[in-house]
Length: 167
Image 1: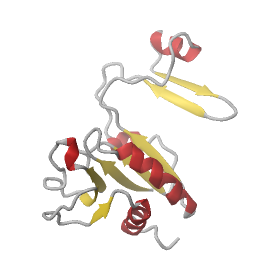
Image 2: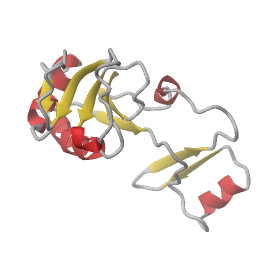
Image 3: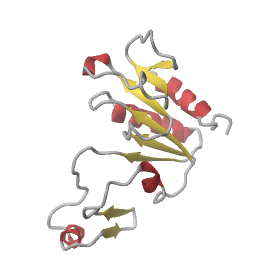
Image 4: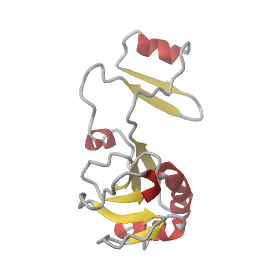
């Protein structure tokens, strides 16, 4: 399974970019899954639902399933946050796992960089940034800078970089 990240500061457009890339990647015939890092407490469950009550009662894991999908919720219960490697062990293998966030993990990544966000670029200090998607000209970039508004070019880069282009 190839792992490729999309990283950048909050508000840079990572999710918007990923949702434009995924259908283009799938159309090439590869299987794609995603994992997204959240910097805050989040909940995919709803108070009052049975699965929520199971977690609130102390269950470490709760799986909910239907004919359409299943979801597994895992409570850390004070354990350290798992690494990306730990998390990927729980995923069904696919051709390409796209990682949103996890900007400090050691996988290759595309940085989504917009100067208007007001944060420093990651590419200057992270050797795992192998390309940048931006709406600006970045004279000091030592990796390819792709137009953020050209998802086809970004898909071509990802497929080539991950060795999936000739499938």
